[in-house]
Structures are given as C-alpha cells and as structure tokens.
Amino acid sequence: MPVQVKKASGDIVDFNEEKLRRSMRNAGASDEAIDEVIRAVNEILEDGISTKVIYQKAFALLKKKSSATAGRYKLKKAILELGPSGYPFENFVAEILKYQGFRTEVGVYVAGHCVEHEVDVVATKDHHHYMVECKFHNTFNRHCDVKVPLYINSRFDDIEKEYLKDEKHKKKFHQGWIFTNTRFTSDAIQYGNCAGLKLVGWDFPKRGSLKERINIAGLHPISCLSTLNKKEKESLFEAGIVLCRHLCDNNEVLNRLGLSENRKYKILKEAEAICELQL
Image (cartoon, rainbow, N blue to C red; front, side, top):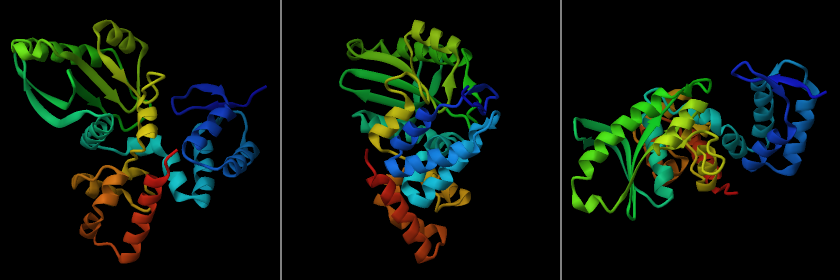
C-alpha cells in the first residue's frame, strides 16, 4: 500500500515518488542528488506525514549540494513571497510575457465604454491585444473561484466595447487573460473557457501553465535567493528588482541595503548561479 501524505489543503493522497523526482530534476538537481534525497525521504515516510515536511527535507539536502538548485526547487514557495501587495507579481507576469515576445505595460488605466479601468498588464504582439489581470495569493490554499472570471470578463467587455469604436482596432484579436499563482476552481475554468478568457494558473493549463512558463524562460524571482532575508527582498521589490536576472544586470542596487562586501558577493553569486542554471 502506498504511503498516505497530507497536503497543505488537508487532502490525503498517495505519496508520488516520481513527482518528487521530477520537481528536483526540473530544478536542475543531479541524478546523484535526487537519489540521495529520495533515500532520505523514504526513511521518514509514514502515513499522515505532511508534504511540507517532505519539502523541507528535500530542500535542506539540495541546499547542501547547491544553493542555486535549492533556490529553483523552492520556486512555488518563492512565488508566494511576491507580496503582500501583489504588485511584484504583476511585474513578474509582465516579464514572462516579455520573454515570449510581447510588449507590456504594467498598471495601465484604460477607458471603457462605461467607466475607466486599471489593468494590471496590457500585452500586445502583432495583431493580438490582451488585457491581463493578475490574481495573487500569499497562501497556496486560496483558489480563484468563478467570481473572479465573472468580474474580469465584465471589465474586459466594457474595455473591448470602447476599443472597437476605433476602426484600426477592429482588425485586432482582443482577449482577457487571468494569471494566478495558485489554482482555479472547476467552475472558474468552465466559465473562463465558455466566455473566451485565457486562464493561467500555477499548473493550469497542462501546456502553458505559470510553472512551465517560468521554467522555460528561466526567469526566477529574487525570492528564490536564500542569501537574502525577507526585509531585503521587500526593499528590492520596492526598487523594481523582481528577477534574479534584474539583480545580475543591476547589482549596484545592493548598495542601498547597507550590506557588507562579503554579503553582496554571496548574494550575486547565488543569483548568477540560478540564472546560469538553464535546463
């Protein structure tokens, strides 16, 4: 009988060794490191053990091998740290879309037929025009229910009605998008599909999920860095530094944190290692 583990949601599921292996492989861990973690996890496995305990064990062992690998492995948790305002998450989504060839603007006020709307991200590519709303949650248990796409669709319809008054926009493809760092309920997905909205969640859809987009682009947030504490991460977010890549390209921003040269060196080394660890 498979060992039963407890998820953060409280659900009880079978322990999936292959899923754990895959998550470490995606983080760039070597086969040797993966096998070592699996052996260690098997030693503590028992019915009712939480997935959090399993994650903590795996993370600690990976960190001993490579802080960069551990940083990539904690991606899911790192995304939850892009708060509490959610604004860093909007910038993060904009960076992912930029990587995919979109021109993006963050926090744009757009005229609707009835009222003006603030849109989190406006993304354009060729003749495609997207209004992107970003729904950030700081706990993975919170999901986007059907009220979210209902509300977003009504806003998008109001904006599109005004847009189509301009003849040049009538030839463009317009669509509303919703990005969330957690998940959508089944009703939200059903409504989104019916209404023509594009929904992107942590692991939805199977192709093109937030997790997949991040791993393909190699765009990891600075919240992956174990060399930075919470206050330092928040200071960098406020300075517009969201990605490890931003930090590598603009390392003088660390001067405002009042860090020693040794700390700055370690932070940059970890950030560079995460950026270089392309799969």
